[in-house]
Structure formats: C-alpha cells, structure tokens
Image (cartoon, rainbow, N blue to C red; front, top):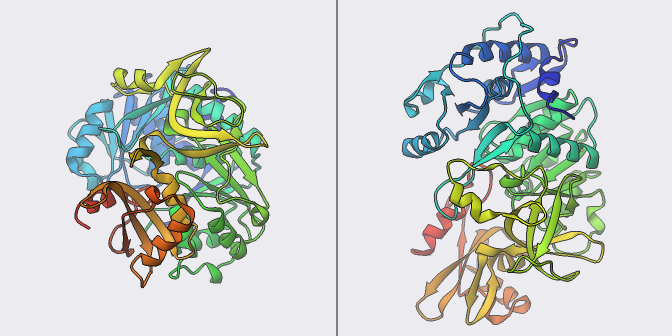
Length: 495
C-alpha cells in the first residue's frame, strides 16, 4: 500500500450504489460517489484556511460529517484532530490550544466551544473535481488523538501516514479483509480504535456504520442485526453489556457477524465463552497496542474460544512491520520466558506528543531503532505468544511486596457475578496502604463472599482491605465504553 490509499478510496466513483458509510442514529447512508463529492466540497471550503502540514480540528457529533471531515483534511495534506464534543469548555479549549488548528469544523450546537476560525459542515454536494490538493509525504502527519492523560495533562499523539499505512498493511495481511465487509463502528472517533474501523473498511470498499454515543446494549445488537454487520470492535465493558440482564441479544439474528475485535482492557476468556454460546462461530481478534503505536501493534486470533485454556488470551505476536523487545529496567533483553517491559519499534511508532518534546523523550528510546516504552509488562509463553502481565503504573508496594492492581482485578473478574471491577490503592486506617476494590455487580453479601473467594487465590497482602459493590447507576462508562476508573478513584476517598 502506498500513500495513494487516500485518493484510491475517494476516487471509487464507478459504483454509485456501493454504500460507504451509514449513520445508525438516523438511518442515513452515503455511497462512495456521494462521500467523494461531499469530501471534495468540504476540501474546497477548507483549502483557503489550511494546507499541507496544517491542522483541522473536529468538534462534531459522530456522523457522516465526521468521516467527510477526516478525508477532507487528509486530502489537503493536513492532519485531523477529533475532539470529544461532550467535554467541558475549558477542556476543549485546552486541547485546541495544544494542537493549534488553522480551522475547526464544528456542528452548530457546539459552536460555543470554539473561539477560533470555524467551518460549519454542509451536506450540499459539489460536482466532483479532478483537482488534487496537498502533496503528501509518508512522514506527514495524518491525525492527532489525545490520550486520557492519566499521568498528567492530556497528551496529543501525532501519527504519520507511514504509520497508518503500516498498520493497515499488517492488519490486512494477518486478518484479511474482503469486499462486502460491513463494520459497526462503536468506538468514538477520538478513540484510536476508530482508525482500524474506518480505514480497513474503506480500503476494501466495504461499508462502515457509525453508532452514536453508547448508552445501552440494545443499540449494538439492533445495529448488528439491521445492517447484517460482519465485523465490530468492542471493549470488554461493552461485551459485558451485551451479556447483561437488560440485553436483547437472545432475540437478535446476529448470524452475519464473523469477527469480533476486542481490546483496550483485560477481557476474561469466561466472558468470551459466554458470548460464544450466544453467537457461535465467531473469530476473535485480540488487539493490543497503545495509541502511541497506531492502535494495534500485536494481534491474537482464535476461532475456538471454547477450548482455550487460561483466564486471558495472549496479546499475540507483532504485526509484520512491528518489532518488539522484552527488557529489564536497564533496557536489556530478558531471558526467554522472563517478564519485562514491552518496547515497540517500527514505522507504527508515533511521531511524538504534540508540543510536548520532554514527554516524548521520556517514552521514546533509541537502541537499534526507535522504540516506544509501553510501560506494560509481558512475557512470552511456550508458543512464543506475548502475554500481558501488568502495567508499570499499576504496580505498588504493599507490606513490602510488589503488587499489580490488574492482577487483583483479574482474580475478581473470574468470579461469575462480577460484571466489572477496579482496584485502587488507598490509605486504610488500620491496614495502612491497601487495596480498595470497586465491583460492579449484584452481590447480596456486600463483598464478603468475594473477599473469601479472593483469599483462596491471592496472597494475603493482595486481598482487598475493602470491597465496595456499586450498581450501574453509581458510576458510568467513559466515552470509550470503559469503566470510569477516574470516578471510582474519586469515590475511594469517600466510600
């Protein structure tokens, strides 16, 4: 694949009836011809404001307008920056100030969030023009996506065309896509999972169907059935919603679904087995990769989840263009089978953090090539598959012992009634530094039985000093569909 993939997609004009994108909320669909015309119209409107190496910010509800804006920016040789339109005004202002857009494309209802030059999208089509804008170089930036900033302020991850192309080539080689693919996009466009959703689908002339902000499982199941979806990517929290008591999955015909992609947080195999009973015959694609490595750096595929041993799937093997090292604290390779930090190298590694050279230098190291320090600890199993162990920033000392809070969460998630959980470190008045475990579920014993269960599988210093059972109304999901851990950390001080 070359950089021409942008133009090849937009120049797919010989089949007006082929659906390119659909809006699940409104039922609207556009063909590739219409997508190209609307993209050209917006490109013409943006051209006076921004050119190659410029920045186009997007403050838009997820819609076909969003897709048009992404492609228009790429066609200009500019980078696009999707901004969560639900953020407080001060947060939006901070992100815009960081990426410094030449122009922001904004829906009218969000106009108050943007102080600089804006363009309001217009569905009016223009005659398709043969003019091409913005020469593109592989190292030009394609987009910036802001991470959550769990270790400080938000960081804008700058990704190049070279990185996107390497990702698409690798995923196509490992997974394989065919014409006729219909992809349900659940991830927000300011979440890097959307990169695989949209670009891989357009690459093979398939159709991508955009699900608006998720609030209930029925939105997913209805869309899967109505549009005969073949592929979708869900975070584990959403998979749990599909299996919850308020889901209508048993009443839906999901026979068209062929692949379920998942990642973003730990997903117990027991959860996938339960889904497999509802929707048999799926291929499960476990993707791992920080935003800084263009979404998926490794993949693990299986179509036999029922017989898989172990509580979790491996994160797999690197994509073809990705190099990995498992190293100790001195960045020396660990022996085979040993646990160490995962370094990720190759063309999928980010350009850097937007306007943050010092933070960039903290996470990019040069050995035989540039590597991103993931902060994730892994080891290789006997089959050579990478297995996730825990994160550097979830490692704490309790009673002199090193504890990964993710390991405590994994043990709790293995209990049938636990829907989701979050382990946080707190200062307990009696135990001192200890773990508080928030559990989403319906437990009449208030956590006593769970504590007994955890005591049977964890060392004493890892057993939570306090277990707080919360309901679905007590804490929601983040915009990306994950458990709102920030909110739970706040509750830890008052629960």
